[in-house]
Length: 269
Image (cartoon, rainbow, N blue to C red; front, side, top):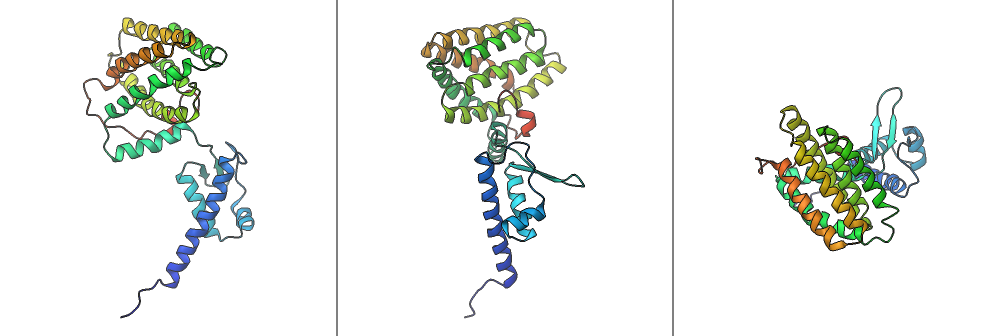
């Protein structure tokens, strides 16, 4: 029986792929460790080839890996180069959206996850000892802005989503902030689309409904400020469930969309 082996060309391709992964791992480490920061321009490809002592083919494969991960964007042309992008909750949300969309997950499924997680985050925020100097001023400012823009549906929605982002990122638990922040960013993309469509159709919720949302935000802020974790949890649970009904509407079967990061970004990164 003739032994099955790998040809020379295949071995070279495998070797180039392994080399590319090693280069990508080192550049990824530099980005994650902050040695390369948002907006930095990587050295020219010929410089990187000399630095890593690899072929141009391997280097370009490494850059493609990082570009797929959203850690760099490669610009072509005379002013080309690779620009560094720090990981964000928006980019994480986009990848999460791709996974959920490929599994044909309904938007209501994402909504249920938020109904479970956001109240817990609000309760954690109420237990932060530094909430009066960190989170509460930001929430109060957003509540004031909401009151000023009750007559502007699109702006009202934008500020409302920022309020939810602040709670997610201000809960005091970094892991919860990253996980919930990614889910919030994914939901925000859908809510923005709903706001634009309902405004264009003249179907955006009436002024009384907007005032009720604003009142819910104020009450939740007060509960967090008072350190009343259980009240914050109850208020958040009721508010999240109530407001999701607007976005889901009469189409509970609609699927999660993987929206580009620039569409879903909002609030803190």
